[in-house]
Image (cartoon, rainbow, N blue to C red; front, side):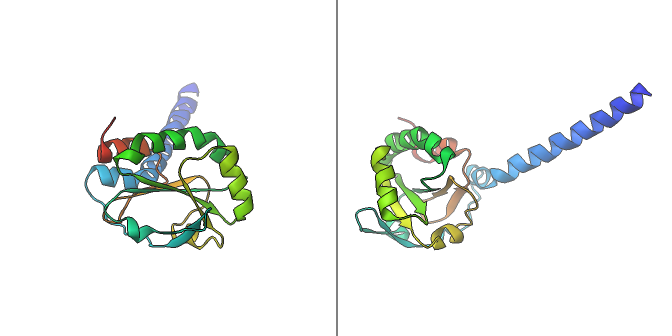
Length: 172
């Protein structure tokens, strides 16, 4: 009887591990495709204003990689990731990376106060309607989207963004 229970438990555990591995591979499929040289998805172009009321148009930055980070001021996890975002900016901005934070559906005043409080060094864009977030299929924040020099998505929901950036731009 114990052998039968052990076999059932082993099969259940194997199934769970297979499911978990499948989910992880899907989450990083864009990054894996980049590392294998199979980049195909064109990034939707957009125009947004930053906190200084200056316009940012994605297609104006062709020729440089662009990292979009979709966030919101109310997001606790976004706040905990700020040191990581600052490190990415410090490491790769001088090597050609264009990095922008896109705040979704919040007032300019609230976002300005947030940016000042956390001394955010990168450009902050305002997606007041949420249309840009929708065009990138953002379902939660933070969401990172890395776009190559030709305007194609290298990775979406980039859990391995550091690895992709090292491959793309090298190390210090």
